[in-house]
Length: 141
Image 1 (cartoon, rainbow, N blue to C red):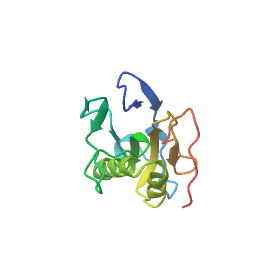
Image 2 (cartoon, helix red, strand yellow):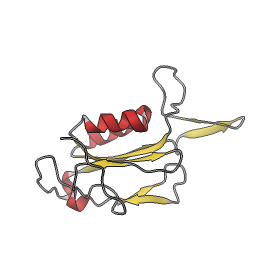
Image 3 (spheres, rainbow, N blue to C red):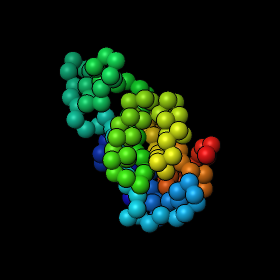
Image 4 (cartoon, rainbow, N blue to C red):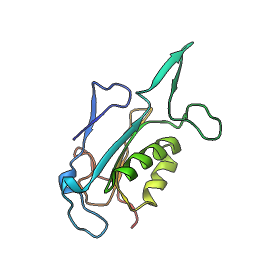
């Protein structure tokens, strides 16, 4: 599965390999038993006077969230978790979003895309849920 760049939809930033995703118990899961969702700032946006406005809002200000992330892709067992948590992680930003992933065992893996182009990958150690070009970062379980 290709993960598109959250800003330039014609560019792929990573490839996820859900065929080898393992859960916290070490059981292998088939592709049909996982869901992948991406939230990003590349869609549903507009520019006015040189300022880009997007649809992910900061709950404290009501304005577009500026967190240093342009996208968050999550792998979970349930679509509702992947969808909701990907938006939450994007709104939290890289550091707080990584802590969120670490504390939510239903999140099997995550690929974050930062404004600077870096792409931290988080997931269960040894799982292939992350992009195949770089190893997953281990998290305490």
